[in-house]
Image (cartoon, rainbow, N blue to C red):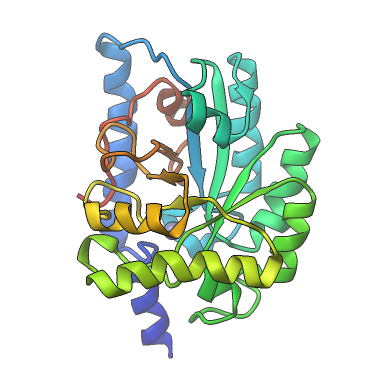
Length: 269
Ligand SMILES: [Zn+2]
């Protein structure tokens, strides 16, 4: 069982070797430093942050602590950013001080740790759920993922709910029949379980190799109006960029991230 759980964690990009994790930490610190030396291109649009869990270390590099999360909101507000719905930035491009907050995967700490902090700041946010995981079909303990009841509660409290597929596959390596199932069925399941009409989709892994023109067509056919990546300049065509926040993002690295230090960085390449 432990082996299976480890394999699944590897598949969703969570379980890395200590070496890979250390490499990411070095890379982000180095890029943050380099970004202060070069000429920065001024950003014209808003920025959408992509988080996963807030205080679930199981999620590895994708997890930020509650203290880190609150501090990042404080840093952004102190720097003059305002937190707006991701949909606003997706629709209009937003302004250079517009910032949105999103969470992928549907982890329980979003409800227990992140949502109360966001409510304190009256900040809008979005959540992208994996429908099988919310159904309880996953390899982790039963308290790791949000269930549909909790997702509904978050939606009632104002969270915008979107899809993150049925099983979190890599769409870059999927056959056409499964592509359509993963994209269409997750939307149908969200509607059946919660009554929510999800029109947004966040690509699992979300980087340049994790999407295809076929998947983009399937998303359109399934009725999604917006597809979010997990990368900025290297994202797949016709997707909305998002900036990935990692556990290695100290105050200094996070501020560099807001200034675009990682806009050409990808995690899994
Ligand atoms: Zn994901």
